[in-house]
Length: 98
Length: 371
Image (cartoon, rainbow over all chains, first blue to last red; front, side):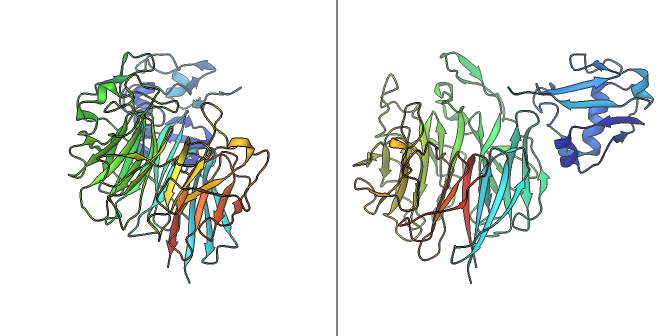
């Protein structure tokens, strides 16, 4: 199972507490994990990726194993520790303001 | 006894204010969706417990929420707003073509006869409709495809479709307004549209009387006379007596004819309200005095209404969707400010009192009169 940590606003929207656990078929990539996440929690559709372009929203970040994966290809395999559930994929609302 | 429910959208959530028909004591619930911008929420005229809310942030985009119990509980519905067909371009700030890009929903207008049908006015300007309670959205693409679309341009707040007015007597007739394209009318339920901007004069445009390009801020109508429309334009308060075919200025003795809101008394179709705002760029009340102006003659002759409103050091704004009326006798009038106050008058504007003082900046105010 892949573990995903959502930002607070999206935990409220998805009505979950703590981590989300997802079954992902095939290689664990950002795309496959986000697809599984949106399938399991439909209200999250469009909140992380633009519906039309499929692009990550500018203030959304993906962290894994203490590395920023936000700018990686969505089809790059995630670290083995994330794929095995040893480490979570962190979805973070970027700090923005002044 | 009648009750009143005031739906307030703010920069940081939605609030629901409730009172009995006396409109003296108010209970406030909220924030709903704390931390999110709520551009607008509104109830169905045929099922007052059915509410729709537009919820968005710069982080996570656009959501639509629906309530079936008057705002006590909410459920997210579909938030997929995809333009129909070839997206095309509109004019960007520098005059170059710019592709249409969905940003947010500014206004939700429930149908007058079906609680599951609701219209959404969006930025970049387009009109969407749902006929299944928000579970799916489809663009009424005839508006964007009218032919003048490539000449539309964003106002300072973006290129938004912010006003949707439904004609209660002619099924299929509706009016919309876009900043900064102007006003449009459809007589076939949104399939085809025509611009209705004849008589508008906008000196900031190269051609001040062009067919499109006018910065219309708000349009209001009284249900009993749907051919009479009132408009607060960027500058100028206007009226039309022929469903928008032609407009005439009725700014009269207003201290400034700039403003955002305009609304009509619920029982007197010639009594209208505006809140004059100093501009360009200041966007606060002239002389630091928050004044509502009322005309009982459908414009031109205006009286200032100040009782209960701050008359010194007040520098808030009242945004375009932030005024509404109830249908009690006497007519209640409500408006919200960017300073987080919601003011109410239970006597058609003669006197005012804040019913909420310290909310986040108010984006929209709607009122439901409940039996």
